[in-house]
Image (cartoon, rainbow, N blue to C red; front, side, top):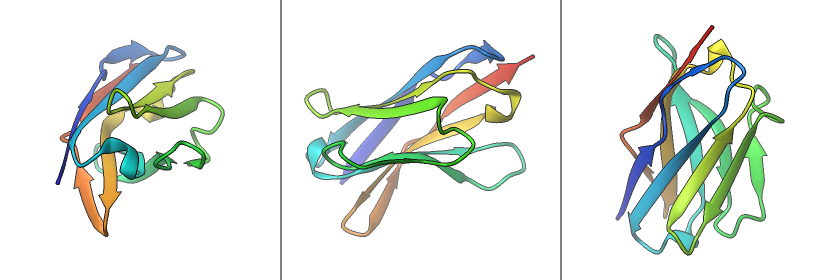
Length: 116
C-alpha cells in the first residue's frame, strides 16, 4: 500500500513559479517510480512528468518540457514538481501517482490556478 498527499498548489500569476510536493508513506518510497498528472476542468487527466525510483530516468510531456522539473528526495519520502514560467493553460488539479506491482496509487490532488 502507498499513500500520497500533494501540497503546494495555489493561485499564481502567469509567468510565476510554484513547487508542488508529494509526501509518500507506506511502501518504501525509494522502491518505485512516481509521476505527476493533471486534470483541467472538462478535460481528461493527462501525464505531466515521471521519475524512476532512483531518479535516473525522467520524462516530460512536451508542453511542460523546459519549464517544469520533476525530482525526488528518497530520504524524505517526498517527490517534487518545480513549475516555472506558468501559463494559463497549466491551470488544473495536479495529482501525484505511484505505480507499484501493476497497481496505481493516487493522491487527492492539489489545485493550481494560473491567472492573467
